[in-house]
Amino acid sequence: MQILHPPGWSPSVGYSNGISVSAGRVVFIAGQVGWDAKQHFQSDELVPQFEQALKNILTILAEAGGMPSHICRLTAYCIDKRAYLAGRRELGRIWSALMGNHYPTMSMIFVADLLDTPAKIELEATAVIPTS
Image (tube, rainbow, N blue to C red; front, side, top):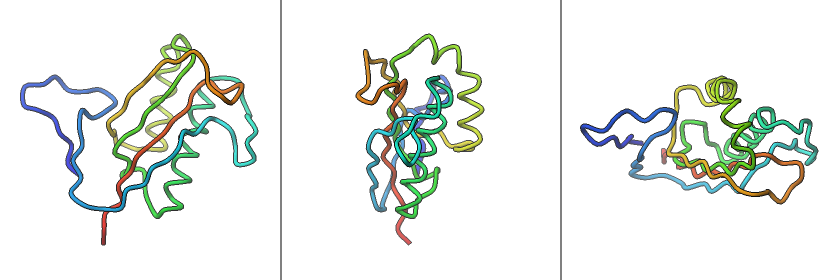
């Protein structure tokens, strides 16, 4: 996996502008909300839902034999921009705990609502697991 950062560009913070992968098995992970394995929300708040949604992504990826560093793209759909901005420090702590120093390409999209109430955020990912 090669991080693509054109010369002269300002550093990206918390994401990569581009990633190139030469070979591997592609894993697509559907949108995950902040519920547990039994589809129960333990919190109505954005930060704990983000943590659970990211854990769900990583659990599915592990099922395919992948690791956090194999994620190439992550898209977040969030219904509460104020809560996201207010929680950025805590979200960063959660990211570091679960993803380490790996920053895939990412998009944050603010939407009017999500299907599963009381979901505040939904994450979907694409990973490439290197071939042996």
